[in-house]
Length: 139
Image 1 (cartoon, helix red, strand yellow):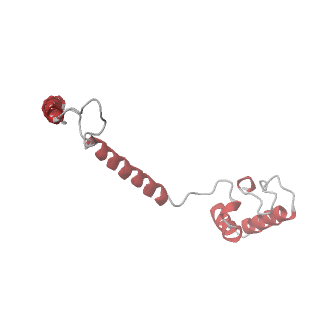
Image 2 (cartoon, helix red, strand yellow):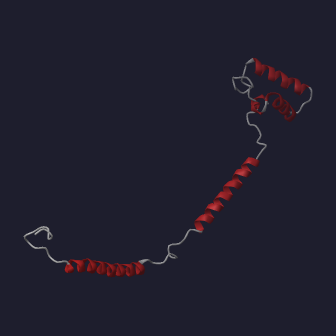
Image 3 (cartoon, helix red, strand yellow):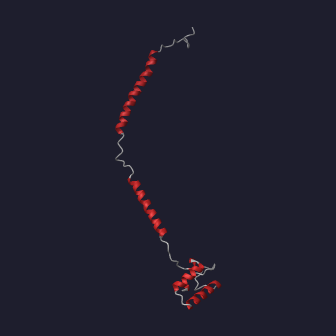
């Protein structure tokens, strides 16, 4: 029975192999409780009440609620992530852009020709300066 208990002092050894005063005192308590007719389960409960759950080598896990909450949260997160990835737009749905590019290239060419022709017209209408003078007003 003492091999299932850890010494509550700072040595942290199993009580059956520990020789410190605290271990000796716990061994005496166990012997006294056995003499009074306590069952093992009741002795373990009394020692846990006095020294805390840390006295047990393998303490019982009494609260699986946190595992359920963690698992449920993870499940919800995975479902939400899956939903997001399935709603991602597919490339087949997006229309091809190439017909629009040709239309804009043609429009650009037309506007460019018009612009260039407007630039050439003022040059044709300008009278050339005389060669002798840099300023036509001064003669």
